[in-house]
Image (cartoon, rainbow, N blue to C red):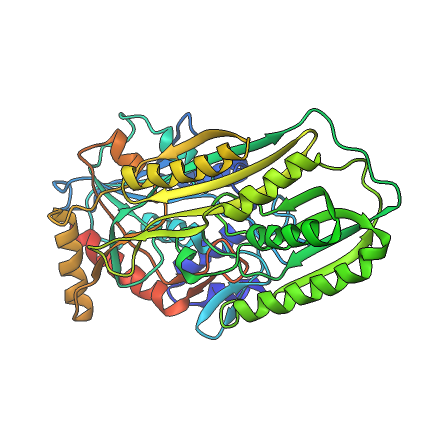
Length: 483
């Protein structure tokens, strides 16, 4: 059972992480976790407040003799990405975490180490009276995974500190000094009414599942399959060669998760059904061959379905298929100054049918505003040419690295003293809240760090146990050094 993780070292961090696994906290469902955090702060006699955006701020006084130090802000986000392979209600069910060798994982769901380990680390710091540090401000933000609502809602008078330790990175031994910005593209193919069914045609449901998915920033360079791209590749052939007509499609979930599943319902002449079965089997074999060594469990199946009420109009269907087939997805460019780091990318996150509309959501990322705008412009052009309506949703700026940062120098020297080597300084191709916080606090000196977390935003998410101990030791030492 998940309670076994409470026995791990360092116990306070794991105890608090266990408590977090018992509290449902998917993005946009923050009431229970913010109430828990507010009660936690007050129960330990610490100054606690909640701002208008729902963020929780807890202040811990400086240790005796450290009152002259500058205040330090420790920050993590409270929400997690809900992804599952089994029946699991993220609004009610706890996460079942367990130990698997050197890792902590969850049973067929996301673990919530992103960013639960960061939250638990800060909670352990707040409750440990033996630590030596200046005044601490613990900032727990809301709804980071979709819209960064909490960070965007920060007011300039909330924080005293101008030194920020963001605890939302996922490689122990690395310090992150920059991150990509992002922008949502919301795309719609609209039509007045559906087309009538074709007499004699039968309905078939096509199901694609078993993909790994993952974080659309951190994992985008791994070449994992995008369920929407694969499904529409198949649909183009089915429509062209077998007279299939598209009735509905539903692929992907969250903008920052690589889509793992897609389902489509098509109709076609009864005489072509057997050939369609063969086509599905052929594409399953093709996908497995093309993604060998990357994807391990691609499942592509078909089954007879009940007749849909109507079809997507043929001209909309064709425009949709061609646009998604032509839509760039994945890595656009790499950073020159930070080898092996993605500079810009896109994630074709979801395709969903509604009444008279097909809605598509894409997340574009870029380390610079110019690269991000280039990706957005490319995507906009593809869908605009297909007749779709393209609108820009929420966007956030990147965090540009400052290699002269005093905080960075202190953190590097502290790590060197502890472990005999300097940590690497990197830029992450994911949307940390640092860039948004810096817009409100432009003089904030910031670094992001964390333990080893692999495959966040997917049911393969795991955190390396030994890295959490190292994270704790490093945090304690750094807080003592920061002046």
